[in-house]
Amino acid sequence: MNILVTGGTGFIGAELARTLVSRGENVVLFDIYPNYARIGDIKDKVKVVQGNLAYWAEVFNAVKNYNIEGIYHTGSMLSATSEASPWASFQTNVAGTMHILEAARLFGVGKVVFTSTLATYGLACPAVVTDETIQRPITMYGCGKLYCEVLGMYYRNRFDMDFRTVRYPAVIGPGINTPGIAQWNAWMIEYPALGKPFECYVTEDTKVPVLYFKDAVRAVDMIFQAPKEQIKMVNYNVGGVTPSRTAKELEQAVKSHIPDAQISYKPDPKTMEVFRSMNVDVFDDSKARQEWGWQPLYSDFDKVVSDTIKEIKMHPERYGLA
Ligand SMILES: NC(=O)c1ccc[n+]([C@@H]2O[C@H](COP(=O)([O-])OP(=O)(O)OC[C@H]3O[C@@H](n4cnc5c(N)ncnc54)[C@H](O)[C@@H]3O)[C@@H](O)[C@H]2O)c1
Image 1 (tube, rainbow, N blue to C red):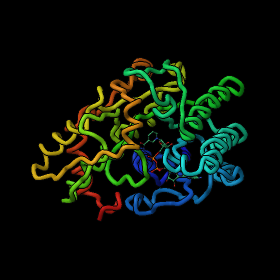
Image 2: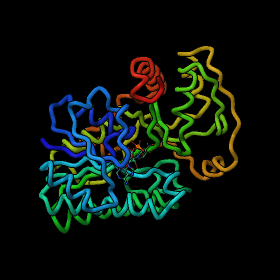
Image 3: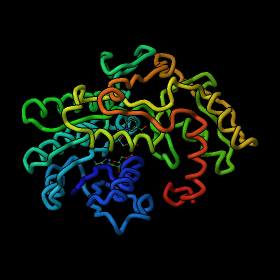
């Protein structure tokens, strides 16, 4: 199958590309700033198209030139960069998704899978967040993603397009360099694995739902492959480590693998302000479990920590950590 992965050399896109290549798909990676180090092992097995989601013609060319039959739309500006420029975020995330949907409609692409976020719920959300919890985002990133979730529903209803979404919590793994407020989870593992001290910028009792990047890839691929009749909710939460664990609990898991890990705490008041009004214990993914069999493989910190350490040792160049 000819598959387009937007954001295809990003943190999640590159790992997804690896999965698709290993299954024998014809993979085209569309990215504004292709990161060739991340795809070093598969670079001869994929096509890379440098392009901007914000330019409809660049999206249309990629879809038409490669006879694309399915799209995994992971290309996006994330939360911090979207706050830095809401205008650029609108062009990339909102107009960019419209361009993907239009290209899919006009060139007869069978299926579009979209990657959304817990940020669509906004702050002051309840301890248990389900697919039916009201979504009232407060960030440009969350607003844009929510619009695209419902835009995809519109395309389903109006044009019978097979659109589906996985909604991720904070995704963690090795080599994250995109700024964000929940990155302490990834860096508290990565820094000690590299022999570096880590100063955590939240309090010991701060928690946020997290999903390991390999599970994030499995989720988006599972929903892509799920039979159409099983997709009823359309936009689904996918959880990983549930219930959410505190920074201190992560520290303990890290120290069980790296006993001399140096971890200290210097909470950043601005970040703490965000977490004081956002205390999600359960990112409820029961609809994904019921409808297409979702289940994370990395459901506790111990598995996440040990696999992250293994990945950093085995593929430091892939994660920009050589
Ligand atoms: N990482 C997380 O914690 C997280 C959480 C929730 C949802 N998501 C979603 O998952 C998807 C993948 O995120 P990621 O963690 O891999 O982020 P990432 O920043 O590593 O990857 C995004 C990719 O999109 C590309 N991109 C950005 N602007 C573009 C543009 N205008 N045109 C073409 N490409 C562009 C970037 O170059 C990058 O390679 C995104 O849709 C994101 O919103 C991520």
